[in-house]
Image (cartoon, rainbow, N blue to C red; front, side, top):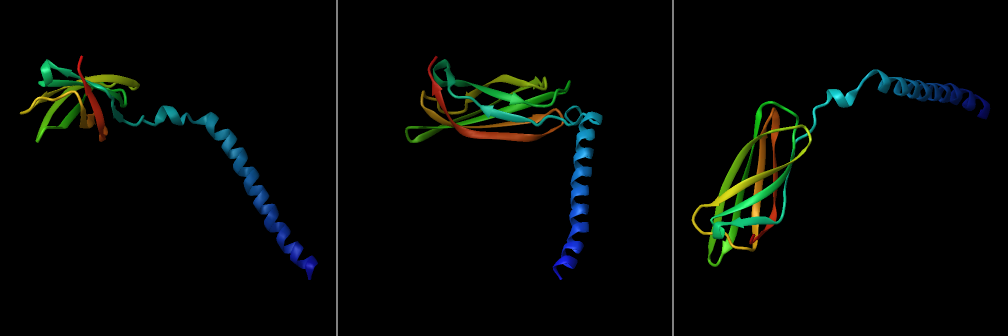
Length: 149
């Protein structure tokens, strides 16, 4: 009984070993025949940088961002919204800029103008969105520090 059970297992083991060997050979040949990284577009991403610089006594804030997106001759745009508690009120504002993606890591500066109340040198909540150059819109939200120049 044991002998017949071993005979039934051996063809299955042989098939499994053959499949693994064939897969290994196929995988070793495939990378040399296809350059997957050249065919795949890079992903877009945006990251708010802290600190941001307070301008004109709080009338505006210059926010730096790190951006990556696929290289394109089309313009991409990035928008930044800031909100900050100022006493019992809220200072808020929005700014955006257009730029051309290089396909690598880029530094982009956006000036956010205060809408009603001036920004102070303190913590603020920032939200950024990057769109354009044929990619989906990507976002980054976080607290940033606003500092005096």
